[in-house]
Every structure is written in structure tokens, then in C-alpha cells.
Length: 310
Picture 1 (cartoon, rainbow, N blue to C red):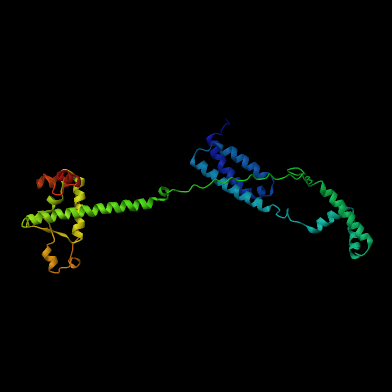
Picture 2 (cartoon, helix red, strand yellow):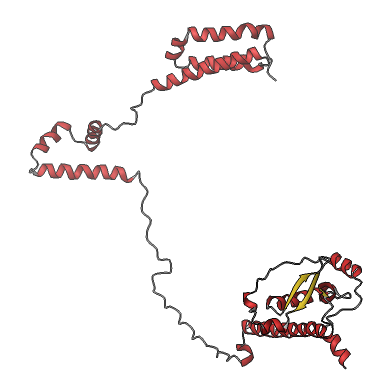
């Protein structure tokens, strides 16, 4: 490690260095190596800077040195790279061995034979000198040799016979989906007609007793079956074959449209209809079954009905 100057010695020399730099600014600017010597001295002096005051002096000296270096850079000659055409011509004529005065006389008399000889011979000398400066051009070589090769004959392509699709393969997926949708729609229509028949049969047997909507659609043994029943009953109400009303207890009841209303000329399309959305969760279904004490479904499934009939 380099020995650091004592703190008191550094404290006294730092301001003196900055002051001397400001006083001798012109001498440092004109001298060639004076700025380098001052920078080396400052680098040695400020090497052990640890206090704020010393750091401020170091920064101040760095700013002054930067400004002085900028001025010295401006004093440098900026025309070193400029091209002097007259000087180049004189140097070129001297290299060719031509006297500039003789060349001027020959230029005035361009028709003389000496002018053509001197000009040709002089440029020949200059060309030989320039040959040593530039690299020679590489010789040309064939990549595949000088003998022209024959292209390989392409092999004939064997086309495979195309497979004729059968009737089952021609049947595309959209057609199958359409058939599935049609079959599902037919099953839905049949189920809606069956549920409407159950509702009409109940009112023929007991026309004075209203049918609770929950008693009619809720299946106490199956929550999904209850949702399906509500889905099918919605088609019956939409088409105007049944309607939902509220009884004295503000509970929904369902009844089919009276045949007498149809005979009296009431158009189902002109009747005012109110649409609603029923939100039914699994917990709601359990509470309805418990509150209304539903033990058996009114709308039995198609499989259960077939078992009872057999």
C-alpha cells in the first residue's frame, strides 16, 4: 500500500494546489507536459481523501482540469486531414521524375509526341509503385471442376391409387350431430306431450282442486328429475296450454287452459304473458320436499311408468 500523506499536510496542500493551478493557468495551457504533471501531483495528493472538505477540493480541481483539457484540445490543428491538391500534384510529378516546369510547357503543347510519351511512361511508373500496396486478385477456380457434370435423372414417382370412401366414411360429423339433435328434439316433444296429458287428466278427475306447482314438478327422490320436469313444463306454459297463478297464500299453482276459453275465441297468441326465471338449488329442493311433505312424484319418469303399466 502507498503511504498516505499526513492529514494536516494534506489539509494545507490541497487549497494551495488549486490556487496555484488557477494562477498558472496560462503557463499550463501553453506548456506541453505541464498539465500531465499537475494531474499526477493531484492524483497522489487526493488519493487518501476521506473528508467532505477534501472531496470538495478534489471535485473543484477535476472541473478546472477538465476545462483546461478542453481548451488544449481546441488549440490542436484541425486541418491535418485536409487534402492539398497542388501539393499532391507536385509530389506525384517528382515521384514520376518529371520536372514541374517542363510539364507545364508540355501541357501547353498537347499535340507533341513528347507529351504522350512522358504522360504514358510517368503513369506506368506510378502504377508499378501502387501495385505493391494492394493485394493481388486471386485466381479463378471451378467449385465442381472444369468438366461439366451430368444432372442425375429424377426417378419416376409411383402414384398410389386413391382409396374410394365408403358410405359410412362419407357420413360427416355435422350430419351425425343433426341426427342427434333431431332425435333429442323428438324425445323432448314426446315428454312435453306426456306431461300435458298428466295435467289435463288430473283436472278432469278433480277440476275444483288446484294443483300446486311444486307438487306437480318436484320429484322427492331425484333433484335432476325435478329440474327436467321444470324444463318440460316451461314449454307447455310458453305454448299457452297451461298457466301459472298465485293462490290465496301467494303460492304458485298450475292449471291447464280451459277448453271453454278456446271455444269462446280467445286467441292464445294475443294473451298477455309474463316470463320469469326460477332459481332452484339443491338446498331449496330439499326444503320444498320437507315443507310441502312431498312423498311421491306426480310426474313419474318414463321408465317408471312403463314398469307400472306392465
